[in-house]
Image (cartoon, rainbow, N blue to C red; front, side, top):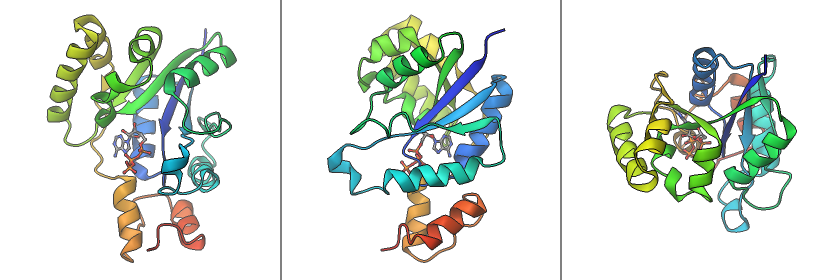
Length: 206
Ligand code: ATP
């Protein structure tokens, strides 16, 4: 039987418990063999606003340590600038020709999907999984309408059928960065080794 592999793209600045709770829930629901986090490389004009790739990668590795079913890939960091998801998936398909590949996104990204590079080919050729994210239902209704207009009924249905009933976790990297900047603790929002890494490396301080 071929493997089912999911890839979870994002900035992960930093990775947080929302990402990990979603990853676990999706693994169980979609019966995945492995879920791999894929931190994004950033275009030069955006890079200054985010932590260096090496920090984001290091924090992801700390977050998945000891969990063999979770992995981290530097495939997008190895290329200069931001990688397009379509190109990344084509590269992954070449690396794993026999596996079933799934690209995981949070519900907030679904509405945005029509604006992605080669969006139609992307949703025609590859399969997505979508995790719920607050505010849940209202966000899904907006996304469904945007998908219908951009892709037509059939492809919109294909995408909305992949929205999984994952827990609604109201944690974001933005909120974590804001807490650190104002001197508030981030315990329980991100795994302890990641919180420690943020402290030791002075990330997100004003
Ligand atoms: P930021 O606040 O910096 O925008 P973020 O918390 O949204 O960051 P990203 O690294 O941008 O985190 O997200 C990577 C992926 O994880 C995206 O597809 C996003 O929708 C999803 N995601 C992030 N946080 C959650 C959450 N709490 N619940 C569900 N999905 C999430």
